[in-house]
Image (spheres, rainbow, N blue to C red):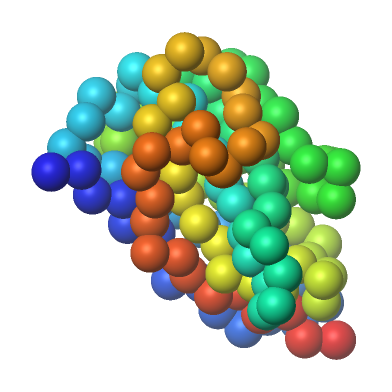
Length: 125
């Protein structure tokens, strides 16, 4: 059984930093691309970024590039999302996803098979 579990998010202020983590079990973690997505209230799920199997290649949405950093520790089956210079528009539920096995750094949520339950990040102004 595959389990994808995100760490707790939180309430932060504009300009603050926050790191999320995501632990995956039940599959060969180092075989899959990993992705982060987010969903604001009343909005569609949005791509944040993705990282390839060995962690050497990343791809980010324009809205977070330069502020967010994705990394992974394959020895711990853990994915990370470091968020700097947070803005109120970064508020939303953040989801960790996996299951892309062909090496693509996909921004399409439909290509990811396994998802976490989501964790809320709220940025106040």
